[in-house]
Length: 442
Ligand code: PLP
Image (tube, rainbow, N blue to C red; front, top):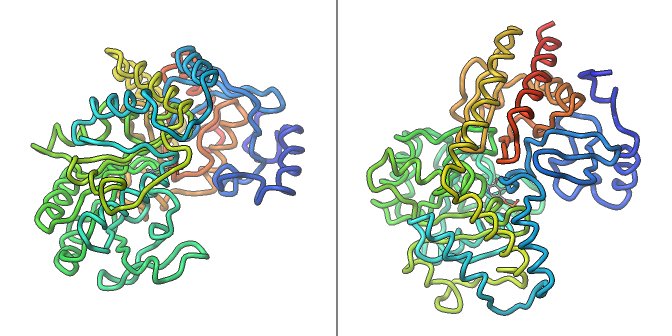
């Protein structure tokens, strides 16, 4: 009964739950992309997960390439993480007071990311990004933020913005409820466009507090910042006294132990961002995120400095236990080599299957993060990503889902492989993909 028709194989229990959910939760979901709006059909309600697999409420199994949108680098229910969480829960859920484990986690993060001398823990990537921007503005005494089209840094008001017309005009809010005044200091540029970056600094350099970017943009599927682009961003920030913020919520501890910045540092001598934003993997699936940077900047934060930032659940004892256990596992020798090899095998298999069926497809990956495009060549920016044939992607998505392979339900989202994915999982996924490509090529 395999089919690429989204409605053909909707499991009954997910359908019932979705109807019930829609009565009490807007759109039936607590985060919009989960609703399958882009691809159509009914989201699967997940009942449990183990290793690389999810089971939905109807008992269907899926090979999971979403991994909770990035955190589950060890797969689901890893024994070390599970044990750490169980032990921490017995000691107490939350104290609202400092704990030894927060210090350990901070030390562990700093050990792997040398651009950070101090770090503050928060509960979500949104919070971390928003706080890093406030800190950058506070530390520089400036207002303007530069961000890039297609990069996502959470849903803080000042970041929900699309480009205005030309560099002299600032952005327009992309969400209702965001007053124009709130985005009037946000400048949106095209990713990987060095000339535009030069021009923006020439026009506004003295007012720019920070440039924030995803070093590998996972919110436009998978688009790398080119080395010249990253290098120029670094130079311009330094020349003009602005802070370079790398949002490594997705890439941090995911593409390499030292994050994407460690990869750019290999290619750009002396490269380091000023501030780094982390999330996802550092919590191992628990609500935990962080931002950090040089001591002199971080000491601008309350209670030491004038930039306010706080959180009832920040540094939560159960979340920090999960994060620490996760970081310990992933810092074992060879972890990323094995993860990257598995991810590459999946992408290579996908490319081979597509070629065999005459479907244009390109892929890229780094560590345990991947992207693939139904395009003849890798895109460099968001408009190029959006040139993908949407209906075709949707058929691919539903074809894979019907065959038990769970990829992100939108063509602008990255995918993730965990250390729990086996060769067998990859082989099954590739076989499923080949069947779907055959249907697509008809
Ligand atoms: N930054 C990036 C690069 C992200 O991918 C995300 C979430 O997907 C965020 C920030 C926001 O993190 P959160 O969803 O934890 O608020």
